[in-house]
Length: 420
Image (cartoon, rainbow, N blue to C red; front, top):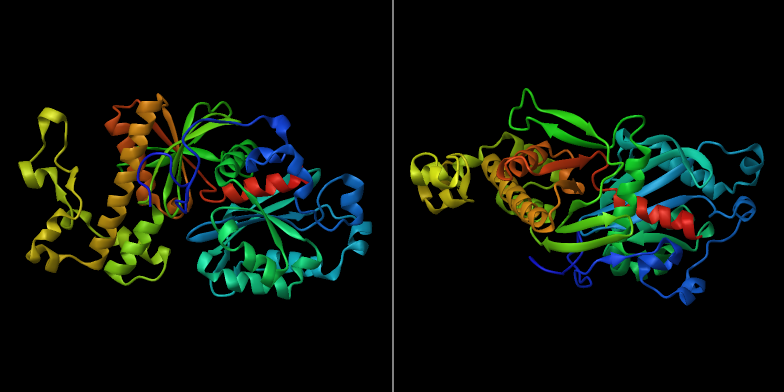
């Protein structure tokens, strides 16, 4: 879809309002992220009340946040660990079954995964103590998820779910018709920023959520350096999903979408499927980790015989992505791993270049990269860290977050807890 200008948000590239700053007053309540006027508050779907939620003025369990992207569905689930004997007695069987099913498994069906290593423990949300779980599955398997929700009788506990991402619109009727659930649709960029700020504020089980990479070009010396985002503004937030959105964030309530590109994680995976025959994102990354992109790309040294000193271009810089593939001899010599590596480098370089230009134009020195494209993708993180610092002569710094692509889902959960 769009490459430049005020176009679609993050993963799906769908239409978005012009790139003017969004100033959202915290006093506006739940209508702030939806853009709806205050009188529409009564139209927000309400969950079926139960004893504890009525007493405490909070939503009934289970607590979910959902981000339905173009490639992956991200789901966060809060598991209470402070259930009282009274609550245990009141708790309906379907709620017990859902909690047991989600927390006793690390895999759901053929493609659902709970990222156990990302679990946040001893977390307090809305006055309750528990753990926050992070679950993902391919968007193409939405029908399986809806069938599971129906089998687990989820609609007997909730009438609606807080959801963000383009799929909240695309699958709205399916949720209603199959699962008996109404989706309360939330703006995905609002949810993204809320999720980033919240998760960074609670940390990662005593560790820092945010980090940079020191000496990213050296495999032996490269290491994570914790960074405190306590006073982060302004920052450039680069969300890499199926596509890419770049946001300039001036405060928690003031941001603008600067630009975006359709060349994102979905592009990398799609091209790898075509070029290598791989079938999963993890397989594509594994192949890329074993390949040599210099056999595919034409470098500066391939053209100049070395560095291009006048403009400070080192010989190893890519002059033309896939440029060597014009030669049949070189096409015959490359492996699938080389093609996967070159595809990854091409997409990553493009994202880094656009992010650098946006940071310079917005006069922002901190660039935070998030999104599921970075999941188990150390190659791209190192390349982004190195390129940003190198090409800016040390003026720009790349930062990353441990929970990568789950922030939109966290933002949806926060909306549930603050407006129900």
